[in-house]
Length: 322
Image (cartoon, rainbow, N blue to C red):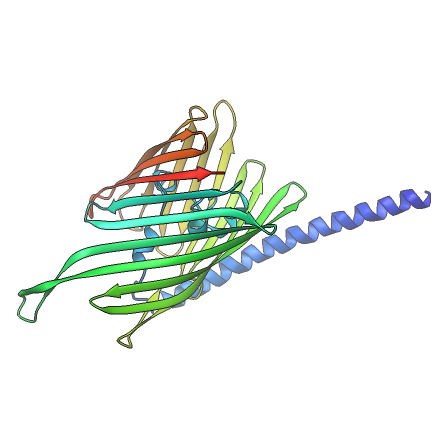
């Protein structure tokens, strides 16, 4: 073997070793993330008091119509919320928003998100807002004494770093988040963070997200300390191109023991139909459905989310792609 052939052989062996090491690293990283999340979740289940629970409901009509099984699909403007690693799948620059009257109870719930490329990284930003007006207050004697408003806001900044490892795409992402709550003239604030992973092998994708890693403390102007409990979601999705583009997705939320399933069928390049459901731990199956219409660079989506106890929700969202 001549020197040029020997050099090429050595380079091939080095590249092969590098791919193997990267695969091992990615699998080990995901295993460590899930192990850490499961361990911490057990401890925190006894400590958290449910702050920020309203933000765990989900965003984006497309995702909600698919039963909220979106941690392995997140590929658009809602990636900063569902899985920051999904920014690596979001092509172009994407800006979108969502609004709903949650449960039909005059809970104004909004989301605005951005996904784009910046300096070789995929980055994103998002805003969540939940506003409730006219909450009635009662005195010690049980008589009404007036009303107050509740405003809960979250701001997120996210990034993702995609890597290609010999036919398998691997993405890691993270978000920093700032909470601000106001109620009856008092304010609570806190900083937290999310981490996420995505692996894509052909038409199969695996995803995992840990929201509010370690729990996020909310400190109030009264001196009280609240906490946003950590939430752990793992899921998978399978995509087929023939005879029509079809996606199946599933997700399990370790923090509350709920199971989520969904499907999306692209009838044409403009029209998509979606359906799914959620099975809360110890509860009844909740049905979800929706549709999407794409008009060039703009798409609009609608979703129906069933909840016989609290009330059903109709969600509308839209997204621009540049």
